[in-house]
Length: 179
Image 1: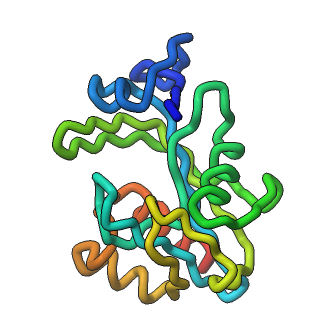
Image 2: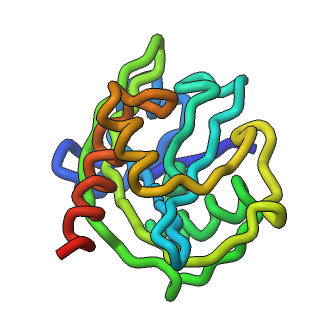
Image 3: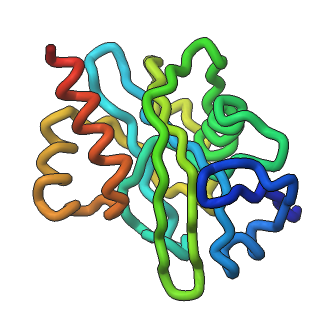
């Protein structure tokens, strides 16, 4: 199934154009993405391990869930959809809190990702034995303590993706929650 994204200009404004995923990544067109971190009542964060067949960051631990915002879609709706697709977990819009927006550019091989990102926090206790992985995308999930994930970030992204933006926002979230 072909995915279409709203094309944005360098300021994040809608251009009234849409393009396929492939066009956006080949031409470096700006488009929208979302990601979220799910926390349980103990403050642990659920991370997914990316599938071995992923083009970018295969076999590395990553944010709980995320992906592109489809043309005409809102960010919170996209995150609910991505969590359901990747992990088989049902979340409601009222489970989600917007944290921060950012831009990012990642160039890996012939893929140019120019994103306007929306980061969300989800608080939900999940039994990981109930998770239904989208095997093309995700090979495992695991709860990480705050210290475990901070150690990985501070140790040159040991075993996790080198997406500095999301990890920096997670660190900042931890700092703010301690106050």
